[in-house]
Image 1 (cartoon, one colour):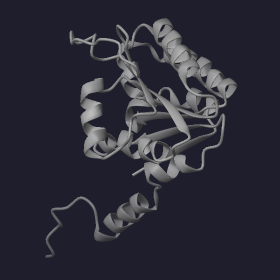
Image 2: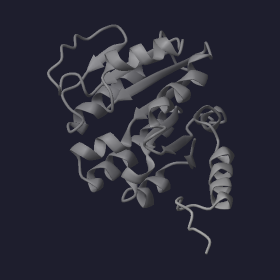
Image 3: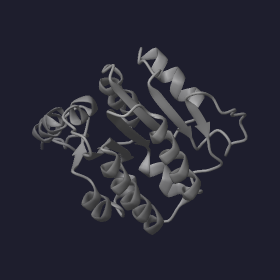
Length: 206
């Protein structure tokens, strides 16, 4: 009598799963075609998420006429700067809004391209900070990255985040800025029916 395989997936199913993953675009390619005022929601699984911020930022940072605003809700400014430095990403034309450092009791003094807010829960403060940061950027090619929608859900209700995302999407279009919202796919299921209405494309990346 043949023994049952100890693996729950057949080799054909594994092959299909691998092929499906490989057919997904990379984070860099998913944002490369964004035009002014266009917004993308990028979804990744939890295992691959850590590499997505650098992969998204890299193509923007390479363009010398692009200036951006990066809202950090997932990791503090110092950690992100270390990661971006290791990835050899130039952040001189990027303004950071850190919603993590003060919340965990860290020291965060305002800098030329850096501002720390109290908590991801204070969305009015975040909105003002984003508007002020965008106003400091040179007019022209601007972009915005929110890292991440998933982390914001820890501190706010889905309804509150949906309203914030709707407001933010409208402002980005008004500014003519390219927008990228990052999220862990399984953690934003309740929000997807709403967010997908506010963005131009929703992309699962590998």
